[in-house]
Length: 88
Image (cartoon, rainbow, N blue to C red; front, top):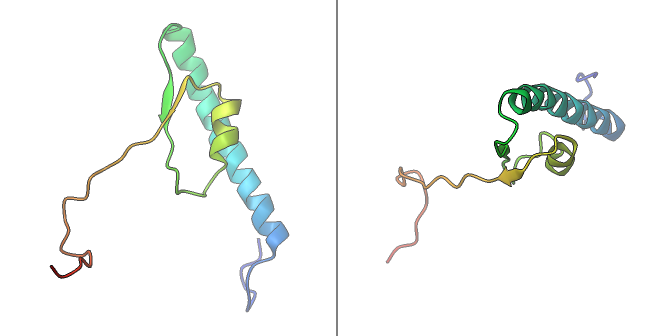
């Protein structure tokens, strides 16, 4: 992908790259799932998908990999000094 352009990247190139990334992520996880299913066929398989991440297609990933559960981890913020809080 040519990144020497003085403006935004070509939308077709970006779409192609995102599809490629989705294919690669799904393929890698498919390999892992196949191993897990072989050794623990009755185990529920889940993956922690990040709802705000757009690096790959989460819907297709979950469907293509036949996950039992698509999970989402919510991590509390423990360091609040960098967050602008309203004055009370």
